[in-house]
Image 1 (spheres, rainbow, N blue to C red):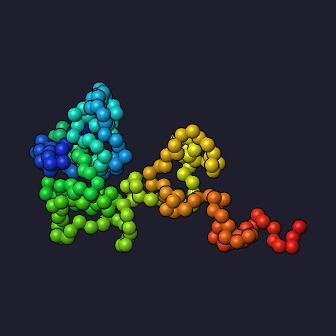
Image 2: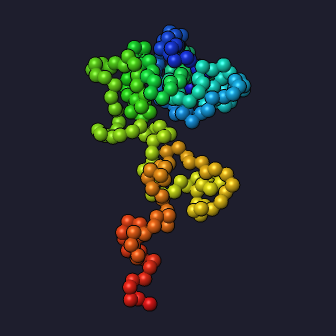
Image 3: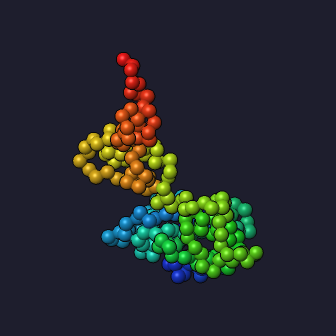
Length: 238
């Protein structure tokens, strides 16, 4: 299978564009998901048109780079759907894919595709719980409103958002070192550049410092949590 077209669609034309692709023979629903673009700054100038890959017909840069004049501008969430067209004769190009995407801002609902493809209901539920994107006009065969699909009852937050706090990082430092001062650098070491915190890493102001050496002991001979320090000899020892 090869994907022969990538199409960026304005949010208001989302349902109509997917419906038109279905009428053109892309009548098999493959998948739907989202991509967090909240950390993408608006481009000062239109991005150049991506180079075409002559062997596959796909953009050499993939679907991550909006085409020239794309309506996908500014931070938000890309909603992506992949459709399949099956021709009558086996051979090269027997199965073709078409990818369409649109962008919503944080907190903005997206039009549901359940009126075009009933199978979109499961994928929109997953996108709803993982990214916090609501789908206006959603309906399924049981007539229930959109609801979580995979996460346990009572789970708080949307795990695939880049802003979702990774609790494990509250006790273990971020392992990457893409910027001076990140990673395993000694606390307080000068770098000459502003430290950049990776998305999803808890803020030390809210969660507290990661390194116990940065927390003053409450009592002599005790650590930050009131636990006797193994590094300090007990009273009376040499």
